Length: 115
Image (cartoon, rainbow, N blue to C red; front, top):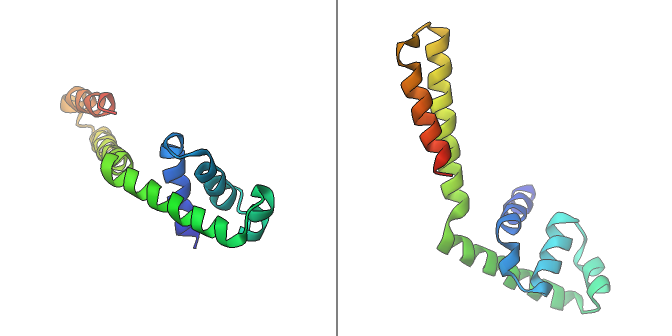
């Protein structure tokens, strides 16, 4: 369950601006504020079933947007590449192989600039 909260919390952080107001409210209250469907229904003045339906549509919208834009997976890939390059630099420093460290830093900067 926590994975689902993390997934939709992250998707919401990236794509909330493209959701309509009701979808933003229901995602924020359910996944960010950790409110129950009953509590959200009281806050929004709609039925529990209405909240559930809104939540499912909002989840689907977030997934559809992410499948088209793919921003999160691209960012994760860049992050892994940067971490890998930083580990290479650290290993060279530990092994006192300074002769190519300038090239490693150049590659690292290029990766960062792609973000």
